[in-house]
Length: 263
Image 1: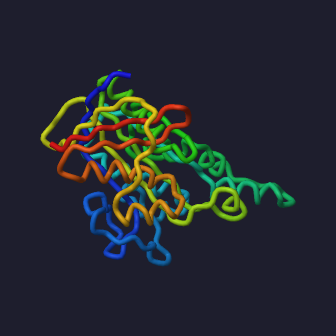
Image 2: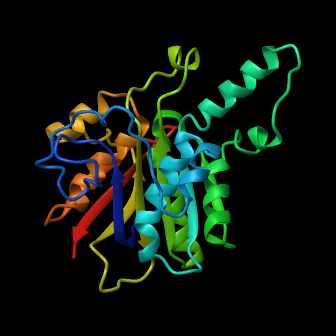
């Protein structure tokens, strides 16, 4: 694959720290990883508070990250949503209902159980009519989602918003897919540089090993086993002031090579 330059216009990270629970993409070097306060829940502004109970934690996480990067994207932007585990909480509720004597399941449960539930709810809430893709790449969801978005920017010559999200699964699903911290992340990508562009990315495929995180925050975040945090080595480069290389894992023999240049 030839090197192609893509511009990053915004980044978002919904993850905990000891200092606050605001997006931390610009303070990774100094933030201290902890856990969200007890009872913390995602609170996207585009969803009325009374309606939050209709959405899963995963969908609310995704929408909150999408809200952060949306101002940097035009109306014709496409979207890519990536989640390793999808709507685990909703699926668990359906399975429990099927065990009951009546097997009664509300229709909205099915609507919110599919892997593209988050992207669907986001595009409905924002009245978005452009393409929205949902990706599931297990532990390599971050690299797979970003590769899809980068290629879409290159081939379609249009901006793309990337949203990554995953939250702890309920029992007993958590026994086989355990993660201990909710998180979501977002990137606004464009084919043209603008005053809001913070960096450019040249991408290619190669056999280099995945990049290890540098900050103590990123290392502790990855220990929670949330695949969203696989994007943190790239965020460490994006929020720096120089050129840096990052390799994200893909499901296959090749990985995604990213060369970041600050603007």
